Length: 120
Image 1: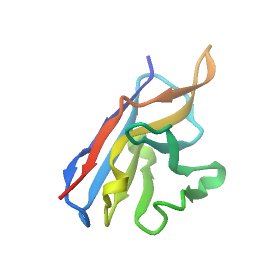
Image 2 (image 1 turned 120 degrees about the vertical axis):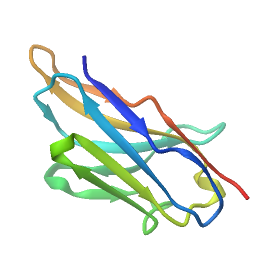
Image 3 (image 1 turned 45 degrees about the vertical axis):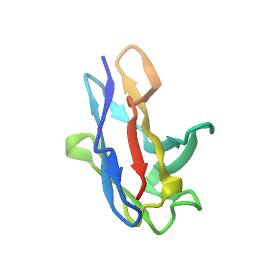
Image 4 (image 1 turned 90 degrees about the horizontal axis):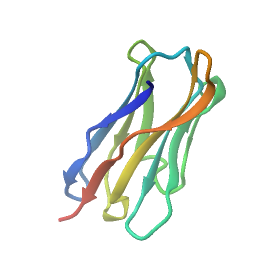
């Protein structure tokens, strides 16, 4: 069974940094892309950063220049380095990946969520 396992959330002061990790585990054939979303309290889930096809990266305007998405193919892991964090970055962060599995085609999987709290 494919799972996306996240780690790295926590509590940080404004201006601080955190790094999130998302590892795809289980039996699968391919990962099409990986992305990070977040959901702030009382708000809808929004796209933060993603790897698209051809490894192009895209960022929301709110985080561009402060967040960096990266990946390690050998470890089936994506990372999100978050610098200069602001209180408005507070929320639960989710990774997402379309994954190909034998006999089941492409399906989208989500991580369990990592809580990030930015406060003084």
